[in-house]
Image (tube, rainbow, N blue to C red; front, side, top):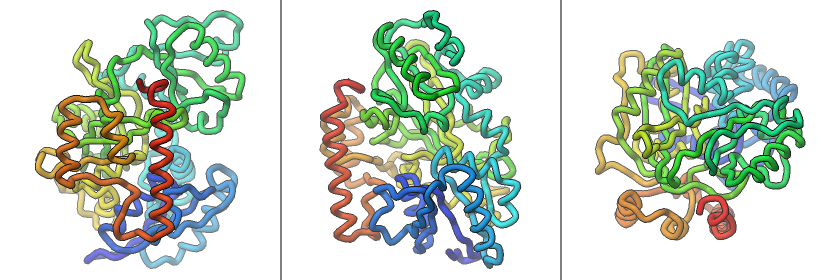
Length: 418
């Protein structure tokens, strides 16, 4: 790809919505297809002209990953342009960080060191860091495998419902059983006992995070995306207000409607935190407003751009361009921090579902009213529907994806989100 000043080549890892959103962000700016590598083909990157995808079985974990990357190092060793390596998922981000020392003589790897990444990726450790920096999070109790498999009842100190989720999100990707969810909202002691038993009986070894359930529906959530330059200075922050989440068991917590929001207090607190821990690269935070003490409780940090992060590009802060400005143009060093969404006239609603699904399932409130006005004004968009990348097969694929969302909301919304 070529800017007015320099050329560069982005390489994306994965084939999901995150990959398509980043590829679209690059394509919007530079009008060139993006190279990607993945272990399997997922729907979002099918029938597209903006992603050149190479499939490598087993590429999502070592040893195949690092063996393949060594071959790719040879391919790109004499490349005339800087090559930026971007992982579009927890596993890929962790692998890049793990092998950064071996890769960075050929690839630009905008990630923190592996020890720090592993520490922050573990939710239990992340909450300890939150304590250090005075960031609020839900009341929490840690459940270990030893405790859960001891034969004694596991202490549960909170009122029901409670939230239960894996401390190790990367390990959780490989755990499968009937009733498995990305995170659980548990309504009773019997359900709590059953879920904990199933988790450890099916191979999970890390801790579980048991939390007081922060009351309120999806519209109490917030999501923040940030880019921190190689000098550990925050250069962009963009806050989103999710109005609706995916109710399907494997996708709970995935946002499907986000309206932009400006909150100076959140921006200042997260900026202070990221700079204090000497972060670098993309970061994505999930949090929820707690009406009981009027605070935003942090749930987790993702050490990469988020699945729904195209809402940042949609609102005028092109997500792909920050890493280019940082490592290729070298134009961020003296640039002021951009705090997104202050100008409401520029706001755009991001949707991951059909408009009719949004209208039917989103809770009635002032934020939904504002979102409906943006829809009426044409100020909305999705990751997957891109006029510059449309053909008959892709159009049919999009109809199929939208149909599946409609079916899943009808099937799961009352159970998991109602």
